[in-house]
Image 1 (tube, rainbow, N blue to C red):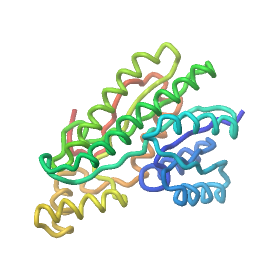
Image 2: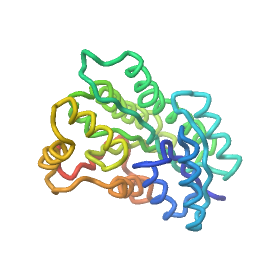
Image 3: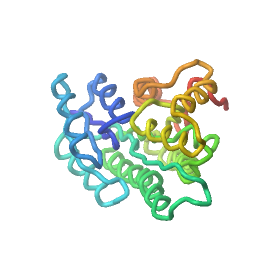
Image 4: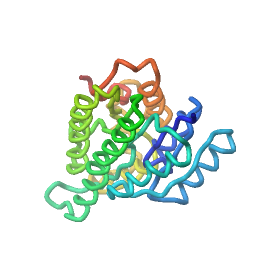
Length: 256
């Protein structure tokens, strides 16, 4: 029976990198993204490389859509093995000036979306009776909060909490729940963060990038592939005894 990995937010950036990496491990890939055009492009590229893949449009903030996605994927591919809650959004603004609609949307996507993903995946794994892997996108901002990203930081701290709580509850079903905490990863989302942060601080984008780079011990930004390798390991037999953990992938920006 084909084993499948569902990856939310897989239309670009880190999620896209995870999709390509898990396809190398012979999983069928459900490429889920709110932008169906992007998701379809990734799925087509995967199929051209010989992988089984299909694109799905998904707003993770909608619980029904998340559960429907799992049902559709099972009908298409047969069995769920991995669920990666990668989808997320952010905005840059001061704490006191943050727009309520921006805050609500961010929490709906990042926090509630992860909650619904854990629920939907766990119920399917319990039904299958053979365990499974749930892997969540937290962040360095969920280890040490980022200025100008108050709501994002709050959501990522919360995701680390969800990861621990779910791991404790689901261990009896042989379901592991872990998270990855990226630092600075060069993606379109990061480009937008740098541009807005630089504007608020009165810096050029290049000066902003230079100042952040000085905080990274290994001297370079991460790539989506760097993060995808961690997700690949967490989904592998080598990580059978790992659950409830959040792994920093930040090149040595923070230590815990």
